[in-house]
Amino acid sequence: MPVLTPDRRAARRWTTSAGRSNYAAIPRHSGAGDREWRLFQERARPVLSPVHVTVTGAAGQIGYQILARIASGQMLGPEQPVVLRLLEIEPAMKALEGTIMELQDCAFPLLRDVVATTDPRKAFDGCSWALLVGSFPRKKGMERNELIKINAGIFQPQGRALNEVAASDVRILVVGNPCNTNALIAKAHAPDIPDDRWFAMTRLDENRAKEQLALKSGVPVDQVTNMTIWGNHSSTMFPDAWHARIVGRPAPDVIKDEDWLRNTFIPEVQQRGAKIIEARGASSAASAANAALDCVNSLRKPCHPSDWTSVAVCSHGEYGVPEGLFFSYPVKTSGASWSIVEWLELDAFAREKIRITTEELLAEREAVKELLGGAA
View 1: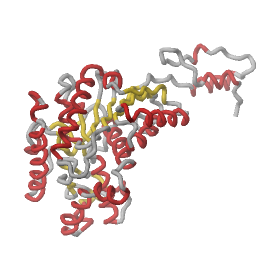
View 2: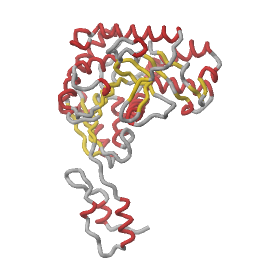
View 3: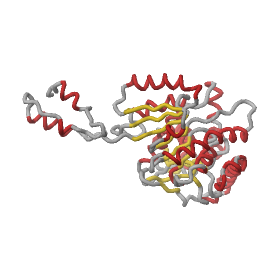
View 4: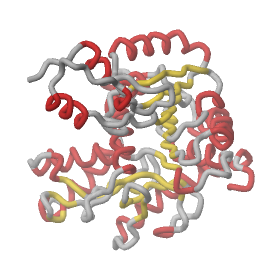
């Protein structure tokens, strides 16, 4: 293999201040053969302009798990440079400083800059993706409605900042819980950002459900498809195995155990997060970070023609769900756009499960009604 001179090795990573490749400006060295120089030029690709990605709650456990994976290209691809814009509260800035030092020490070629701030406007300035991870955790003895109202104080200003300074192509994934209603609150304060740019994460529930079906049927998890999560990211969610497929066949035909599907599978998925907290003394972090990346990749890439993913989006009345709620649906994606799968037939059992989770979301919306303005 030809040996590159030091100058030519440096040429691989040299770009103009505008972020464009300037390989053509590099002078040829008389000592290099024409063939090897042509091969080098063929390998050289223009450098893409960096995409700005905002992560809130960046010093938390999920933030710690997800930032290096974004910087390494696992979210936007192996050739897409990124700028990380990290939002935290003042008491967590020291911990965030340590996380940033670790990111620097990884020497990620795709990581062009890191911005750390306590100011939402600075954090969301020019971002094309916003992962709203930070939220106030539920404490012992705290009522759910109390938690929702506390988080409203976080997501209101973030919604306003997104509306004012985010890039025109921004897409927002809410991860911090209660994510459905947190998304509702943030969106209510960002009237200029279209409905179809907002998502709340139920991919962790989808992944958990797929794994349970894979374990029960004895197949690799990638052989489980068409998994639907309906409703709220909470213990009322409905993991729908009856429209899922295992090795291309309807899941009930493979499992052949209706009692297990109804009375073991559903509560196992619904209570998985609580079991993890009980076992490790902290909520899901690695699996939540992984699910967020899975979700973004599913949204930015076309899905398989016969498959779909689950994500909570703003309802427009699909399957009888009241308009405006953030409700998890089966969604097909083209990469540039997405659409809800609207042709699934639901039996009485499924309709009742969907009714229960819908009622919970309506109660959550009622609890913050005065904070939503005209969006309620």
